[in-house]
Image (cartoon, rainbow, N blue to C red; front, side, top):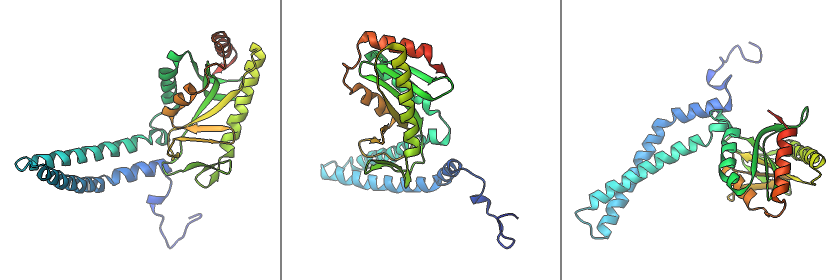
Length: 255
């Protein structure tokens, strides 16, 4: 057996599967344990509910307040469990990040005079998931996902994904932004700079949900539109926005 031992048989549990597959398997296998913990939490909630009922003089209704508190704790814990699992959907391949991000951008920005173009590329060169053009400027947005326990942070100006440098992720996006800006500026005569952003669908971001390092801004998908709308709205006039959007739609290839 190449790479193995004739004395120790291979354990199928640790061979031939992706981290995503194992994450989902462990999550499902741990369901009975999570249910037990949920019952314990509900029991604690029941005791607290009874105590609160007695504290406020609801002697006859203390059992009801206990049951109500237990139900709330049980349901809340179940909802949080489902929410935590669904947050990993893009990383697990169950959903497409570019579809989610495109829908969020259009829903939040179009009514504020922003144009959102999905899946665009410079012929034979760079490609991006989303191009946003509006009064506050121009942005390119790509989508990425890491394992749920990967910490994304900035230290001394450097981008990190866990213990790994993030330069290989940041540099290409910064270069793509420069290429897109050069093309739009050349074709329209409007000098623009493009801000590169990365939507993080799974991974640990700081409490404020935003990391800026090495020329790249990373944020949760639902934070992207807020960051764009927070920019100065006087960067581009309505006429310039229209010219840039029409030029981008004409010159950039759909992917």
